[in-house]
Image 1 (cartoon, rainbow, N blue to C red):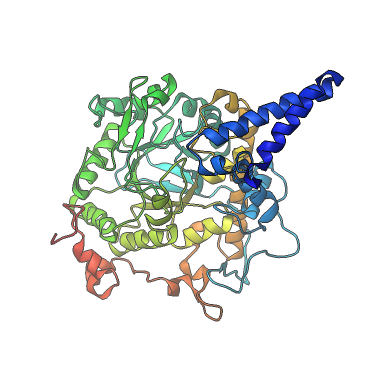
Image 2 (image 1 turned 90 degrees about the vertical axis):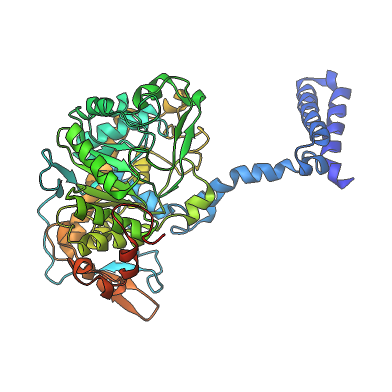
Length: 530
């Protein structure tokens, strides 16, 4: 009978309240409340979906309540400064402070375990300098690109309108305009809120071709030309895959296709929309280069690049072979790490598909350097890049600039409630619910987005100056020290197999990428011989 104790007690209290009903409001309220609880317990007893509820009516709901509250208790009470995932408390606090433009210094020493791998640090110089450039930038545009773009070294990574609400998109765009950096639209198209904020935009085009989609779901050149002509659109990014779910397509149910989303994506209101796993406009590396050249021409000479998470290593090399064979250059590549985030993705893809950023970045750097293309093709990266050291270490290993998505979500006020996928975001960021979006004040968050960028770039210039450099582009792998074991420390140029310029062209068999180089072919994404 102990399994039914809570139900029995609730029933007895209800009966007792009924007996003393005439004594006053207290007894009446108690009786009503106890009766409602008793009814809930009886429902638990007869329903068939939850075994625990049937066997332990009312009592088992304590477990459900604990499951609901567990993330909050763990985040705010149990976890240490550095234990939380995906982002720990120290990381989140740093972003909040920088976004609010208050000091982000820490007292009493590091919380990190600096004696255990994979701890890393920057090798500072005894001849440290003051970096004069408070807004370091990089020019993007391969030879012959008519409208090259001067990009900040720190920008907003891809997040679509629809995944994020209207207020969040507008605040991000307005903050980027205020701070002089770009805002990647994500594959959901250029929305009215991207335009309203006024930022420089990088238009991401995925396999759904949103914003330039034909009725059959393919690519529509004329629609592309019309959108790309917008002066706000500074660069075009072909999305091959994303770190959170590489190789995974998607379906946007018609019920979620509102007028505003339909307008941005170029589809009908209420129309279910499919994003296939791969592009239909091309099927090989050579065809992809020809597609990139077509986009560059249709856009009036704006830089065109590709974003991808690294999977098969020979495919990255195949892109380089295609550039060499056709003479067509991508203006930039963006490597998205497997630790990248999204509103919703299968657990297997989040945890076990796609190379982590560091390995993907080093491979792509080797591919470009080894084929002699690095001077013409810019390299960017994204994936949990929120601190000045993270940016500096990525740039030391070959990145020309860095993007972050969740970093700027925290700047908007994200509390990592992990409700991005259910439209219940408590801060009004990752939701289409207008009542929840109301809590996000665009003018206030615009300033916070700009503050986070400015203060992070300022910290980056200080880190760069400590290394004896005046611009982040001067950082090299030898500036990053990597703890391999508790007793062994090596600079990054010894920790990683880094190729020399043109090495794949002149002596590929002597490199660790010899096998992949021989498998790569410009005419197919499939390995040679298969």
